[in-house]
Figure (cartoon, rainbow, N blue to C red):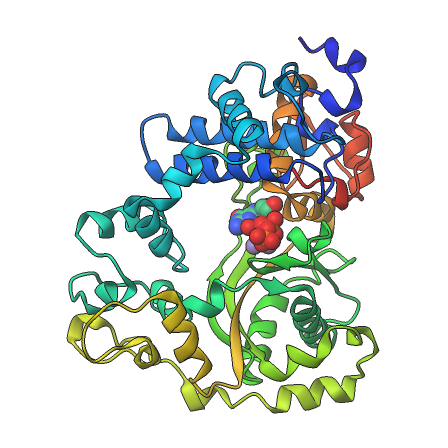
Length: 437
Ligand code: 8DG
Ligand code: MN
Ligand code: MN
């Protein structure tokens, strides 16, 4: 099957990483339905739900690379990742005939789905926890808060406290403000460092569920210690609300063998999942002049942030001891009825906070692995998955966010830039904007 690759039209290559996948394409209604079904399959947690989910995702990725709108079933008949999928074809046919997928609409209306998406929308609450809560009969955020047996984690408490903020997409302008603030701190800590906004924003999206930063330094070793100092500095300025720091677990073997390739997207870098306090003043009047803002204005904007002590969370207070959770009061209702998401919006707006909560990820990579880290953290996840799959099957190599390992010659291959990685893999280079599969 692999010999076909060269002959195929560029839009119908076997692997998504061989195709150009722009952010905007004419088949949105089809890909949205397929990706909804991907998510629903994951939520279902059945025996083969992972592979069912992946089949929907691959089908969606195939359609995203098509330059023309699908008009009839034959238009997708020969596409890799669709031609063998009766279910996906049925969904496409349904949308072609009726304008929507009855299956998707049915799931969306179901109590099961609405409950699961409410709970998985809580930061720190995964699919199995959500399913457990559903099974316990919990139906609302109030039910969760009111349950004394749950032992909520630190991240789940934050996820409930900032439910509305963290389910509001981050705008590009907000991301830029955070980028500026982070870059300033990093420049002061270790001059010459690089701070790149990776993830969806680097691929050209103008909204995101978080902001991702890759921090490095051209001199190997000088990146060490930056993250801890950075987090301290941001916290001191009142810009961080929550940090979940993961120490580096990089070993010689993870780098040299490119282990964990394709199976797992988690890498081994020092990193931090955080909740950033974005000043409300940084939100509004920033739509057009963000790049002209001066350092003085930056500092002025930061001054509006209350000192961290004002609403400093105390970590040892949990619902288990019956004490009110700090910050949760704005979600509480005296009559015990459920609080709808729109009511939460209202209450959050009344909260009097001068900032909104936004998810920010930091990752630190040493110079020697930088290109691989950049490729990995630029995504999309589907692009990474397909590139690792391709690397394995076509090149007999392992690719990870740490390096590239040639299994035929039993050696690891170095690269300084993303372009060099594509070249080593005999792939045409794709800029980040073309990796939106
Ligand atoms: P979004 O935030 O706009 O919704 O989309 P995104 O930026 O593409 O997704 P993301 O969940 O923020 O992930 C950004 C990239 O980071 C993604 O391609 C996968 C990559 N990544 C790694 N390692 C890890 C990891 O350990 N955890 C997570 N969450 N992402 C990782 O390379
Ligand atoms: Mn992201
Ligand atoms: Mn992220």
